[in-house]
Amino acid sequence: MRNNFHSNAVVHSKKHSFRTAANRRVDRRTATHGELIRITQWLGSGAGRYLLVILAGIEAFTRPLFAPLKRILRKWAAWHLQVIFSSIGKLAETPLTTLMTASVIGIALALPAGLYVLLENAQEISHGWEDTAQISLFLKIDKTDDDARAIARTLRKHPVLERVDVITRSQALAEYQQLSGFQTLFNALDVENPLPSVLVLYPAPAYTNLIAVQQIVEELKKRDDVEIAQFDLQWLKRLYTMMELIQRVILGLAVLLALGVLLIIGNTIRLGIQNRREEIEITKLFGATNAFIRRPFLYTGLWYGLLGGVIAWFLVSVFFGLLHGPLNRLAALYYTDFPPIFPGIDTLFILLCAGGVLGLVGSWVAVGWQLGAIEPS
Amino acid sequence: MISFYHVTKRYPQGFDALKNVTFEIPRGDMIFLTGHSGAGKSTLLRLIAVIERSTHGKIMIDGEDVNKISRGRIPYFRRKIGFVFQSPRLLMDQSVFDNVALPLVIAGYSRRDITRRVRAALDKVSLLRKESAYPITLSGGEQQRVGIARSVVSKPTILVADEPTGNLDPKLSREIMLLFRQFNQFGVTVLIATHDITLIRQMRSRVLTLQNGSLVFSNTTDFSSTVDNGQ
Image (tube, rainbow over all chains, first blue to last red; front, side, top):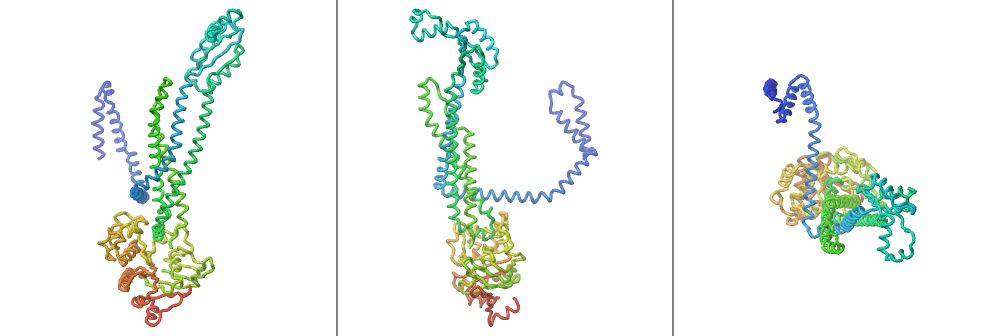
């Protein structure tokens, strides 16, 4: 055996040496092949053989240790598989009852999930509005247009600002006169231009985070050539705060409804236990552990929760599907379009997790409560 | 196999169901427990099944002090005992096979072992051909035999029966008793609570008689010899 390896290795390495550098690059697989040869060579050598012997020894030594473990694991898996199938079978026997219970759970989960999806979308849209963030910088009245341009030049070097527009005093006046319609009045009074130069700053998209922008505004306010630095997105900030508030409300609602789901599942399981009281008593008499009795109920709770999660996802999908048409018509009136809202796979995942956990916890509590009270007679 | 030493069971209301009961049932014995209703038969069986614990005294079953068994170990302890009830207490929504398989499923036997053992147990009570039937379609005697198959399927060392023939006519009762005798001959310790005196006479076994919670040996005339021999 060892000789065989060796001669093989020799042939391979000879072949290997015949290759030119150019075609060695073409065919990379031979390199790993070469490595394999080196390993087999090494295994054939003294040290490698020792290692093999030691490994075989360890294997022989641990086999009696691991074999029972493996058997236990296999038995455990068989148990669970059996319970999984029988619990699903029990639920499938009464499809209407199962569907009704799961629907109640689904509706309870759908409400916070729907609100959450709505809020998430609203947040996403409003993030788009941040791009329109701009800062108006009113310079002191004694600054001339040239001063304004000079300040604009220095500000353009600021990494945060993408663009700086200058509205000179005369431009401002012209604009004001045009907008206000007091043109003749100004001419008649012949007053000095009362309007200051204004710089309009557009933050770079990377800095559209409201807090970052706010910081820039604070920085600019400290400059002594600046009279007022005005950030035009105060309303957006208010909207954000409001959304935070709504988020809290949804969270509170979700907690309440989760509690409801817990009670629904707990009560369903409790009824199930009561219906099978006789069976539980008998299984207890024949030596069933509490874990054995608990298992089918826990799985039943889990299935209810998961099914409820799927139903919730379905309901939310349908709801937003129905909303899409009118929403788009509304958006069209504002000359924009609205991306279709659809609860994604992540929402499904969250719903399944929430449903599953609530199902398990609900049934666990119900079984724990009841099981102690049921003793064989 | 089953030993009671000065066992007293007092219920919270102050009622003594068992008073200073002492007896010993050797391994492989078959014993009848008799007494009028309310004499304490059921209480005694409940103590053996560790459904309740005694107030005083010591109960040894298969070398284990029952009062010292922790709650968590009770299920494993109960697997040593097979139970037969007055009404067979079968699970009506499961087939005969599944009913009999219950103790094996609980103990975690493999599917193959379960099939083999359930068939063997059903064969012993001659109900193999009814394995896929539902209990509701069986007669009372057949149902009781299914119950017995269930109690012996996991090969318990002790078989405890509470009025197993209470609902059956004399002929069926005798059949059931002969079944118990068979299992006893395989080495199972059998304890049967009954008040069917004629049946006890026919079976010629040792008898424990309870009266108002106290043990009185009532093995008169024809039984005295068997008691002495401890057969």
